[in-house]
Length: 375
Ligand SMILES: [Fe+2]
Image (tube, rainbow, N blue to C red):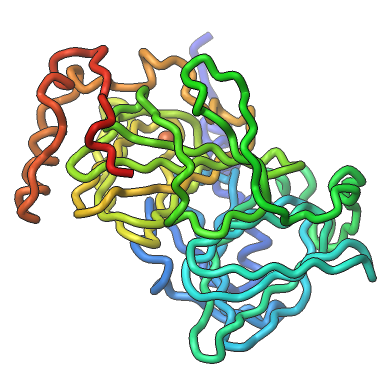
């Protein structure tokens, strides 16, 4: 029967309005929450005091995070060491500004390991370990971007203390010895190329300078890529690097993938199939999140190779990965003409020209030769 009661039609909207356990928790901190599609510059983002943590901070609840992933900004005052913290979840941290160190230890009095980081470093603290952050500079604040899966985890266990008071540590991680030894390359016998290794580790000293990349023909632009797996964790990330005067193919996947720009200048376009296009200008320290199943496409309009670092969502949530390449990626010959026109106009404004090969627009199986990759 095609009858729907008023109550039934209103019920889903009512449920949507109810804040999730995670939303209630971040509201309880009193720290600012930034919404929308993107943050143009984390370095200048408005923060607020978080007395308990003795720092200034903000949460990002961008549209594409969709209650799956947390992105949080912390500022550490010069020469300050923050009180110890402990999360029952793995957490990735990317250093947006400044230099400092992290001390990590298990249990009450476990052995401490301290490592130093600087701008563009990336590290992961394993679940259950205590950690303490220090700003090594006496004059310059530190800004950090943290990424974890707290929103979806709190949908399952809605008690914040469960996540901040658990001291369970995975015995296999404990048995490793040095948690922050140098990252290592692991080959997965990928038929797409012998150079297509994954990097396993918990500390990556400089993502702006990282040059151990493999070719990434599938997404076009003559781009390169590196895949990172955080040891002992379900978390992973990737970074793409693509040359001056080029842009990537549009593609889509599920929600929760938070992207930060370590270097370069450009813009991305995001849109739901048949819907309005959102243009996101970006440069170093910009953050954006493609909403679930929205196409998104990245354009380099700067004078150096552009790189974007993506923190990936929980596996198995809403098709986080590209499911069907034919349906989920738009090849260059199938693009709407405005894509190329806007790109060329944006470059012209900066005195630059497109280096996209003409053949890429006519031959759907065009292979970039990597002669212009430059990085
Ligand atoms: Fe993507």
